[in-house]
Image (cartoon, rainbow, N blue to C red; front, side):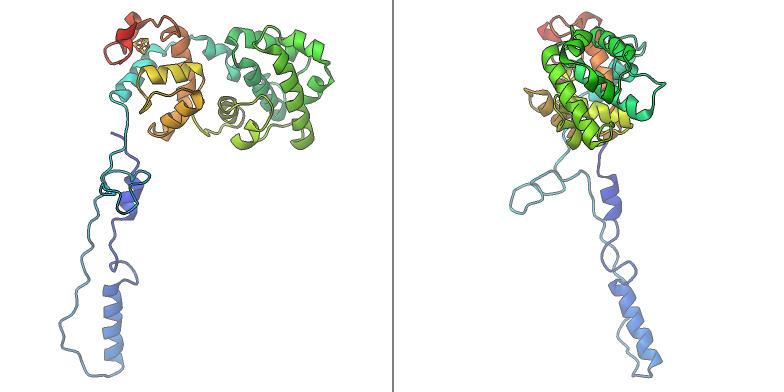
Length: 305
Ligand code: SF4
């Protein structure tokens, strides 16, 4: 089992008084100083440096357990993780090994023009993410193609009138609202970020029409930084079906927090595309294909379908 306590146990393995400047070393210095000054020799037995007490740190302390008087010993609270998650994850990787789901060739990583400047590429990534909410990948990719044919930059979008922009992105979900958000966000990017996109989740979610999932994906795709787990409806649904959250969650943001609580950080970057594709091909929203799923015997929800 992966634990997060390795560095903690290393830093605590030396007890007080054993390192440079500890009690044992100070006593030896005092003896040497006494001898050098010619003072009466001391016949008291030499104090041996105390052996370091070994601290056993088995698990990371969870919030609240550090406080005194809260009952449980502060070092004994096991870190929660879902049963069988490693095998379930390995099975999903196997089922996704062909990488032939819509997200694998039409997702945000595939919708920008790789020949333009990095700044314009980042803007195109953000725009494709804004278009993608409540929209199938194929529809988003087609809208991006039409926009790119016009030369897709902050300036070119701001020069389009709302009617023309609407016609270019139609039929993405909520296209009328997205016209408004794209115009507002593009104006902010032009004024405050010199046409680039911000490089933090906090600044990204402050933009009109940009939610946490888009912000984390933009950080990953546009900036190459894993800032958190991007949770959309697929990730939210599958995490709950597999019981990857300690308690059932009602919204994607709750699911993100619940997953980030136990999933090792080095896996955060792969979860979105892995589960989105799995949700597009196997663990479908209404009629999951449990008969074809390698997790059928490990999945608590398989019986329900
Ligand atoms: S067994 Fe069914 S519900 Fe469970 S992960 Fe597989 S497809 Fe989804």
